[in-house]
Length: 77
Image (cartoon, rainbow, N blue to C red; front, side, top):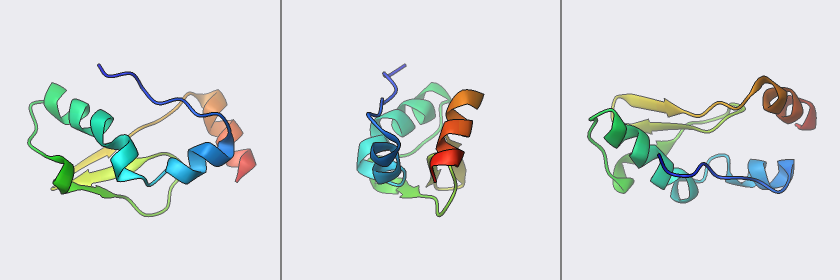
């Protein structure tokens, strides 16, 4: 599996939350590992939400953090 991105701050995370270029290598890795089709051009960022969510055709790819990360993100919004 590709290395998951790391963030220097909650602001850095928020800036990249819907950034398809930033997340595309990991999204494509998830698709490949599950034998699902898709290319960089097919990735569309979801709208709203706390964790990165992407649509690739009829497939939804959503990344979750740990409960500690969820609490930290929610309280920083």
